[in-house]
Length: 358
Image (cartoon, rainbow, N blue to C red; front, side, top):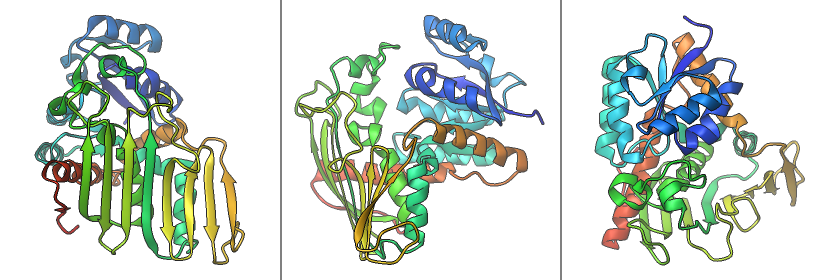
């Protein structure tokens, strides 16, 4: 087997250009060897920047013996069909978030990968490698907050009109973000699927019931630009999401890491708050590294940067090389998707939605 897991990139738009290409250049165990995009000037500019052969032909990726795995970074509703074709070509599959727009599609991709004997992973799980997330996991295991009572996610952005046709970079002009069918959803699914994975991973809890209300107030799109979600976890804990993409006064991409905005976990003995550069922790217990009965700030040089993606790809490649399970299989991505699709269904019916027992 080659020293590095060799990736073919399917879709060379915003996320591939701004993040994935740079990440793979920094990996020890993984590298990009070829790319494709249906838009010729996008493929050409990617080749010029990252110095790998790029074309408009999917076959150039899937038929190449030099490709061991693919990264799919395309409109949400195309992830599954492309993933199935990659699996059938014998390539391992990494799918950008969300892995699909329906549970039926998610199941189809999981089954196709199983039948082909390849590994499938959903990329939102990379947040587990962020230093703040890893430390929070250790603190919860050490009993810093006791039993989990509630979780909170709150964030607001003010996405410009140009976002809906060109993302933040304007690299590719398209309208898929506006479409409910093509995107699967708005602010919740596009931007906060990382957060539901993080909370599930940190607490070990699955969601039992979801209630949501949402609407589109200031944006000419089919998807929501504000949503409020209430969760009931299987241990009885509560959870909330409040997210908006059209909030006047917010930055275009949102301020996710302040005492008012971000992730928070409430326990019977304390709290953990995710901030810009780390954690703010309160505990009533005696835990190494924390002040008892006070708030402790735990800063990190890189709380939410690209290093977590580097770790994600390198650990994926290591698992493939050693024949061991990957940390974040697509079954995890399906669970994240299931929660948010239940929220959309609740918003449509104005009724709570029960999830199958995990």
